[in-house]
Amino acid sequence: MFICRARVFDTPSDPFAGGTLRSDSDIALVVDEGLIIARTDYASAVAAHPDAEVLDLRAGVLIPGLIDTHVHYPQVRAIGYLGMPLLDWLDHCALPEEAELGDDAYASAVAGEFLTGLTSAGTTSAMVFGSHFASAVDTLFSQAAEVGLRITSGLVTSDRILPEELLTSVERSVAESQDLIDRWHGTGHLRYAITPRFSFSAGQELLAAGGRLAADNPGVWVTSHLNENRDEVAGVAEMFPEALDYLDTYDRAGLLGRRTILAHNVHPSERELARMAEVGAASAHCPTSNSNLASGFFPLRRHIEAGVRVALGSDVGAGTGFSLLKEGVQAYFMQQLDPSGGLPLSSAHLLHLGTTAGAEALDLSDQVGDLSEGKRFDAAYISPTAGEPLDVGIRNASSDEDALAKIFAMGTPADISQVWVDGDLVKG
Ligand code: GUN
Ligand code: ZN
Image 1 (cartoon, rainbow, N blue to C red):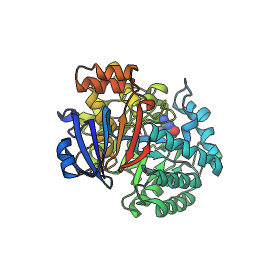
Image 2: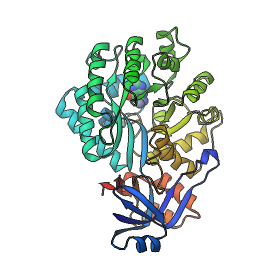
Image 3: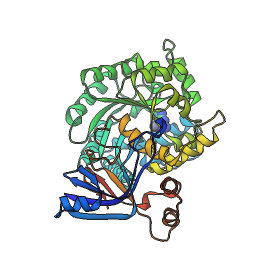
Image 4: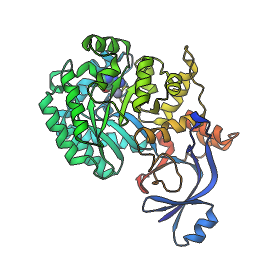
């Protein structure tokens, strides 16, 4: 048991629905076996638990662990290629690197780098796009189990267009996926996600096999890409002439539901948004990726108005790193710039998108997403070096919202000194 005495910012009430930032300059969180058993003033916490160790974190700011709803494990070493649209970037940058994960030793090294990338950035839960190689996905799950992160991931499947070594068959994909589900789904903090890469590289039979796996294994997740790039969208329309639209290629395969997270959705139709809202599927908004690949402006206003759930994703390696602080400020920039009228975002919106909204999208909000009593202690401590611009900014902020805006504007993984999952340190 320990008492965490801290300045805490979180967003239990949704700023997109009239809520505001919850900020406490000096509050005690009593943590017992990973559970926040009390959120109270320090004197009361010490009186109730006089023998508990005290962590004094008032010098910085404690936020809930960040939640990344779209990040590619095999692309850690592909971060930072600039200047290409999606389909060229895949051919020249991402896919050659992904092919390397057929080598077990290589995959093991990359899995370690990937998990370090998450924990360094203060990310404690993630929907992770896995590898095309079952052994590489197994390696990710086994290393994630050791670190303790809340990871949902799965075997990426494709049966056309991609380089030969990344392709599978319906039979093989079902056998390998079922084996991984049996080994990992529901083990500790791990869950399985059926992961067709995108309809551009997955035929109808392969998608339908994924839908049958989802039906046969209640509780598993589904993730893929949707409406990211205009050439991709046009290609999918040609390949699936019978589908109503891109979303429908997943829907008619049985892949669409409340446990589905679809990345990007930069170019949706009104029908697609209405259908996502109807079934409760979520969009993972990946702002640095959308900027880097010039995919377009994410229609956040249309998502919110349609009632579609949205959370943040880093989309490493098209995204430019693991930091959801960077994704947050980039989301803000792009909403400002969107010629068709973006949503003005406050720092509370950004924190919500990177924490509470992610927990909701991943159906983890009974456990994480804010630092209320009754939640698990997943948290990131932001403590910039004294005298550096972020430290000066936080100290001179005009309000807590302003201090949080500075954290998004200037914060990097180097400013995050400690990170906990379930009360256990995973960084620091
Ligand atoms: N669509 C299919 N594969 C990918 C990928 O690896 N990254 C992005 N951003 N989009 C994709
Ligand atoms: Zn992606």
